[in-house]
Length: 274
Image (cartoon, rainbow, N blue to C red):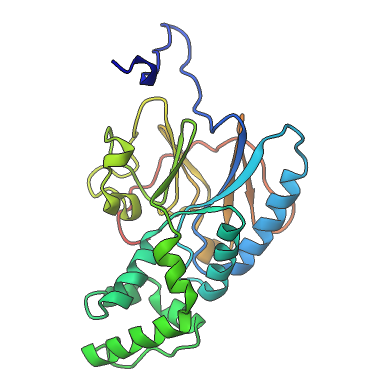
């Protein structure tokens, strides 16, 4: 019997332990970028400055929660920065917008719905004008042109993005986890597109899920979850959650970065492409 895998229950009257990342790690989790490369540049500068204030020996790591492309004006530059960060040791998750882009490249006609939630902006960032007609021939030609223009960005999206990341008691996903289902048995579609029936529900006792996908103007906290998608493409605010012994926020808004406790809020139930 694998007793050592079971977390002991706290005694009655004592608070449950707070989920933490691995004790030797400091993680900077970055929410949905959506083509806002300038916001990412500002935020990376503030993360670097924040790291310099610590002398506790923890290893810092950036975890990007997906949705690097679409909606914002500069998906190409955003992907180039994400690619460089991964080469430098960051973890990049796969978001539903990356999945939709690849679906279009692979099956242009079936994947054409991508244009309805941000694909046009991504195509434009690679210097391509979308066709006037969305028929099979036009879409096939467009997919071929886009794949050629994206170059090694396509290979990066296919080979370097991961479905989730785990550190200590904290799990990082793009969108969602099915309640009570072990991490290795999760439906990949739920990880990237959200749960159709129980969005943002608590996952496992004693675990914290950090995710994006459900945008709001501020980070949102619900039971066992923190959502840090602050709608960068319309708020101009890209948010980072720092996790070590506690939690703190940095963002790309002008002035000093905001650092403080998680604001209480209920997670927005949104299962549309986000």
